[in-house]
Amino acid sequence: MNRVRQRVACAPAAVAVVAFYFWMVRAAGSKFEWGADLNGYYDFLGRGFAGGHLYLPVEPSPQLLAQPDPWDPKVDDSLKWQDMVLYHRHYYLYFGAAPAVLLFAPFRILTRHDLPENFAIFLLCSVGFLFWVGSFLKLLRMAGAEPAPWLLGLMILALGIAQSVPYLLNRVAVYEIAIAGGYFCLAAGMYFLARRWLAAAGVAFATGVACRPHLLFAGIVALVVLAIWNGRRVAVPFLVAFALVGLAIAAYNYERFDNPLEFGFRYQLAGPGQNRVEVAPRNFVPGLYYMLLSRPEWSPVFPWMRMVFRFPFDSAALHPLPPEYFVEPTVGALWITPFLLAAFWIPRNNAILWVAPVSAAAVLLFLMLSHLATHRYEVDFLALAVFAAISNLAIRISRMGGVRRAIWSAAAACLIVYSVVANLALAIQGPYDDVLRNRPARYLRIAKWFSPITETRPAEDPRISVNLSFQCSRDSMGMREPLITMGHSHFHYFLFVEKTGNNLKLISKSDESDASYDLADAWTRPVALRLDYSPESHQLTVELDGQAAIQQHISKLITAPADVEIGQNLSDLGLTARRFTGPLHLSEKTVVAGR
Image (cartoon, rainbow, N blue to C red):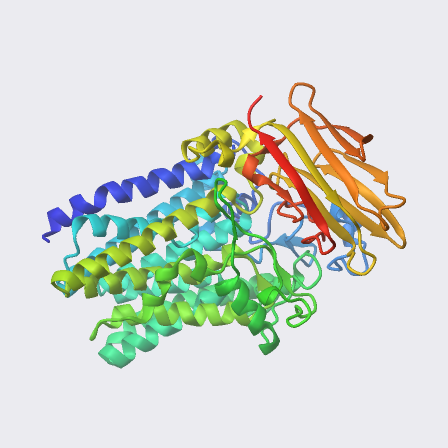
């Protein structure tokens, strides 16, 4: 495939990815605020750099400074800026300075205003993606590989979608900016390596450390591979450039914290255990689980895949989390990008393709050994691994012929399509379902496009009627036992039984109000329960044995018929409810969507 045909095959997919990034970063309702002074953490840092100092132009509260230990997580949150760094009576960021140097400070100097953080992440991710595409096409030309145009287009989509970057774009804050900066720098570094611009590659990999310090491992791997494959002399330009940027980072740290190796993490104003980095073997099992193996919650309802919190391998008893282990809901990388396994299926004599998977493995190992796990961290290693896997598949499939090539092309296409859909699903959900929360009408409109079956189509204020019977067992009752769950995350509803000592209560809970009813004798006999929700009056009624027990006003409920669950908790209410362990009997379930 000549260069023109290659570009023609890739262009539509690349344009689609960048357009999706632009849409996604604004889908939850965040606008680009131009010509203003903003309160983003990187805006503060850029403002500080533009003003000629390293600290943020934000004064710490006198009440905070008066605390004997202002870093104590128990200090009132109203006194501090969460996740900022406090040192010598100034605020700093432990988040890497590179995004501020590359974007925020120059923009502030040129315009005297702040750069919107959501536009900055769009820019970093889009240009980073284009770097990955450029590296991929360069490797194909070097290897003489010519995958079919349709497969090449799918592979470009995988480079842009199947590495968790779309998930970053759902909710943009300082955390996502730092990760996007690292993504951009790794992409640039690999692009320069592919073109043999070794000094530029050294600068890019080292700048990645100024975004995410543990990306140091990617730079070390690149240096070692270059030295082994091409000789130490060839690696010198990379090493010199990498070392010079490293010295600049060390000087920056020294000027802030009197220590060239201190990024400020220990001085962070954060929750318990969050202002330290513990790299220890005891973190390996939960880290392995959350980064690679944590399975999603599947549903026939849009967006089909959701992340939920589980203990490692679903057993708190066998695999308890280490003390102060920080974890947020995640989906393991192997569930969202199964073709990742091809990352080490490397064609012979290709040094560049060894850099990406080995770097990904090194970064992943660090993340698994640390005591911090959240889905957004997967971008740190997943982009490298996806690039390697896609490149390996493209080159190897191109060298096949006949039926074997057709079979492998079809298999790769199926895995890529699944991975793209899975990552899009998590992008729509994001960490807090912000599209649903901030733009419910938009969310329902998108869901309707992909939900031809009424049973699985989310709707606003459907008419609901549920009948069931249940009996509580003294032996099997937990703290909270779910009866009925409707919807997810926002505009949802949850009905459960709560045990306190020997007392039982029926709790009716939406995201705007709670109601309860005492269950005096539910220990000894089955209870017939009926729930009705009227969209006209927004009134929810719960009857027990034919008598009204709870009446509750719910101003907005969003659910699909298939999302009305009996006996399990699929909502995101932060409760400790679980699958009902007593004898719960469903006699009838009727849900009519629409008004």
